[in-house]
Image (cartoon, rainbow, N blue to C red; front, side):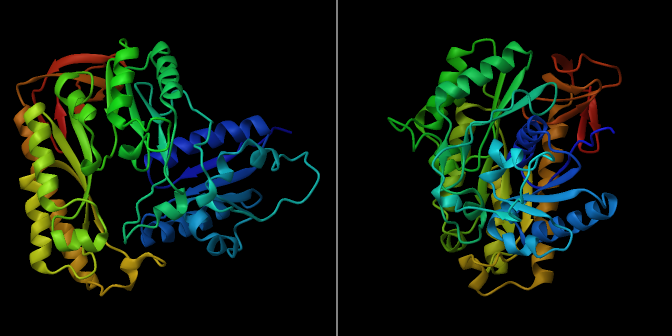
Length: 419
């Protein structure tokens, strides 16, 4: 009888997707069969609700399979999932990266597997050593260099799902990226939960800028290095130096801003104020005039007034943000913000829609400004690639997938450029 390979469903962030690839490898090596693994997200209450929906759907489609639930929602609320009739096993974020966990699920193992395997994530002091060479697409690879978070923003449950911050040593990162470049990857993206905290737990406490400069110096054949979401208040001098002097560092930064009002930022327990964000954006663009910014912004945080919301709305222009990720606030049980006076649901929805509209206008203005310009575009498929600023480009004819091509932008089609 043919072995039935496990099915994996991923929800949430890029780091979750990276870890799903690692779990696929671990499950295959362990010989796990006829299982469905759901890697959940806990960033919002809606994400947790959708996880439950997805589990029920997968059970209907796979009535004989073992349903395994993991990820941040499983880590922070294992009972919620173990109480579901559809679920056979709940494993935590540490356990999911442990080969022994998967060996225990092999069909030839004699014994009973504990239905809930979730340990204290705060006791974890190292990142998982399981590295994936080439996760992403044939053109772009993602490298996890950091996990966890030491900060305790009042709205966020993620530190309780990911644990405290821990870093992958620079030498390990460099070796992995070198292997990826040898395999033909044109772009590498550094990922983590709190990327700008990289190095704080390592000897000599290096900073993210040190890692970036080291990668670019030691791997001269790497065409493009990109960094994912950063906390601008934690950016160090070497990272600013890299922005100013290293054309191989992509001119696109995604900023964890969250809000544009100082009082709300304090109630969120963020470490920056509105002027800090504006000052960083101005300085980065002074050093690299073509720099573009994405940003995370929450609409409807508890106690947010219309005037406070307007401060977030104005931040789109004042920081010249191009790509917005807008999150309507939803209370997460166990967080301080859930106990604060809440904004009414219809107001949250309306404010989120206004922020998204502002983001759409900013994105369209950026795209329109590219028409007639030459761009170096990394092809993700035969007819779609991305500029250095992360804008998508459609081609009328096939291009070499995974390669960087130079082309003139001829127009805008919806949310994409055309070439």
